[in-house]
Length: 146
Image (cartoon, rainbow, N blue to C red):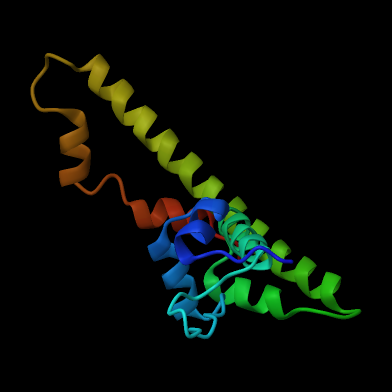
């Protein structure tokens, strides 16, 4: 006999909150079972596995629309489609890392300027921001893929 779980036990077994389970149901990535005469919906271990899959996919940067698509994949083209989606996510992550590295470099430079001019007039960081010497859009745009 398969073990049946209440929503609270499902959430606990999957390592999420009850509201997360409900959110996944509203989003369409988790099916809400019919309410039996007892009044308590019952979930299975397959639902636990599905929620864990969703959480792992989110950790890798997939949004719920992507995950819904992944959950529907079946058949010989599954690996190819999943590969393409993962490759797209990889490029996004690489772009974000490059953008963050540019921001890190700009901040390091500003901190160094501040440390060198610590007691001489206005703060170089404030001055750079006021004068528009630092433009976050340019930093991100510089690193974006063509």
